[in-house]
Image (cartoon, rainbow, N blue to C red):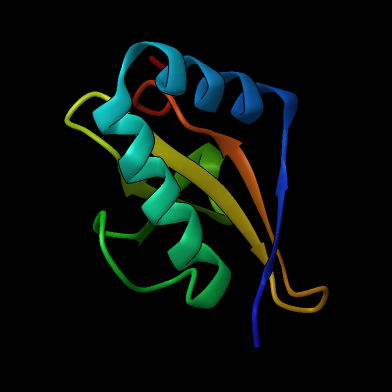
Length: 90
């Protein structure tokens, strides 16, 4: 079962910024997105569920500074990518 990826406007902008200014981070994002389609809770980037005001969201490491933050909807088989730059609320 493959998950469908959906993106917020913020996530699209973050990914475009990586593509333009940080090719290494961009290639890591591409790899992580591929994994999200197959298994959003396991894989590289140390996936972990977030807590507090981000409960229900997951995070994976792109670089020391940047995280991919997303929500998983198993009923619709969709992963919503929220952000792809910064570290949570930085």
